[in-house]
Length: 117
Image 1 (cartoon, one colour):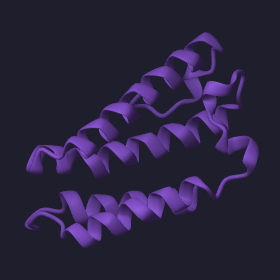
Image 2 (cartoon, helix red, strand yellow):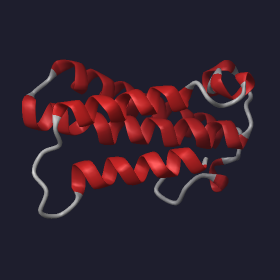
Image 3 (spheres, one colour):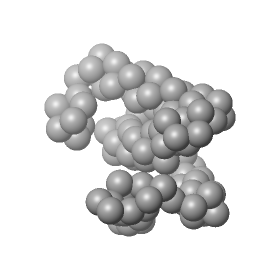
């Protein structure tokens, strides 16, 4: 969880810091790669994802965090460059967030989610 918090800081700094122009394509690519590398770092049972049936709250929270960062990284590519790949990636992440939230609601674990759910 510490590494994903660091990634959030780097993404926020590169994409949303006041007074900065758009991030360089190489920087965006590096952040995307770091996020994908992080996705492979949790234990196997947490990597499978919430779509695999009853899962722990922690697994759901990890996947929610990953998908939120996907949206943050890919939204600017769509908004600035109209990149269809970024659009699809952001939309897919938003759909996964909705699905995880619905599952948490059904399992009565939504109260353990982040406050912006």
